[in-house]
Image 1 (tube, rainbow, N blue to C red):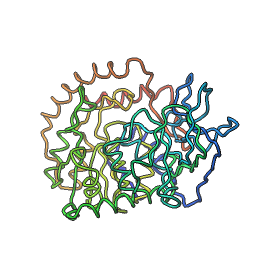
Image 2 (image 1 turned 90 degrees about the vertical axis):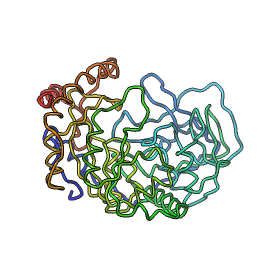
Image 3 (image 1 turned 180 degrees about the vertical axis):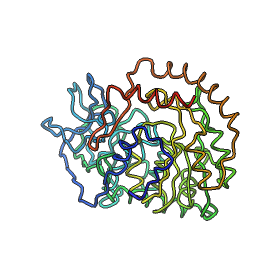
Length: 399
């Protein structure tokens, strides 16, 4: 696809990565809806090795439409389980699904059933499965969409309702992405811009979204400061998005000419962007982020991926991740700006110091997990018996 620039990516497993980004996910098909009389919402439970949650009808039959499907089985859930006691509320509700505090999953996974309220009833009660109330930036999103607090019904225990409306998910990450999903974010963005009178101050800016100001006992990644400097010297405004309201974040994203950021959750925010915007993703890991594919396609983003990492081992979402100014980074900045302003000698020393950080943090975060190198064959993620050794052999040369 001409949306992507692969020139600054490592060749290791690159063909697998391309297969993922070249999936054609966008659809305008009608989405299914099921109205379940006397339906019971089952909150999320792990039963054995299975993740269970969803809606059952009055006969105890599971409503398949209430499950959550994603390309990776790790991120999917659904199915019923035995319950001893069921609460009852004489209400008609829309089934929202699971909620937990993770912004990327909120955008990509949790809000995709809300297309139904836009097309049918903005005032319906919305039942969500959670251990806590929806607050902060998550509530700000729902408010901008037009939802009021008295509409939200938190379900902690199995609860039967007079009627449960179960819309199909408009986004099934890595499987399909309906145009109705995009409409949710267009409405939120339009309302945000109406509330921020001076949103034009971000128009045509180049922005680098940083993670450096996030407070963590042990950081997930090291080396981002070098990239703040590189992009700042080329006119990018360095911004920590969590320091701003959602309204202002949307204004930044909607108005910017181009945005650069580390791979992970930050690129998902481009679902608020104008169509055709430019996105530079500084990849901190070899691991593919399949949720981003839908965002790129729906917004027709011009995406440049830069492999800027030393990935000795397969790791989970908590890292550790080592960022490095390598030949990919140097080539990108020389091609785009004529120079890559950094000290090779200093960078050599930094690699050695970062390795000393990497080893204990890797042991701490991954010692009980058998992390694999995910490879996409065009249909599913799998791996090979040699993938881990190939990964280590390829990146150890960069230390």
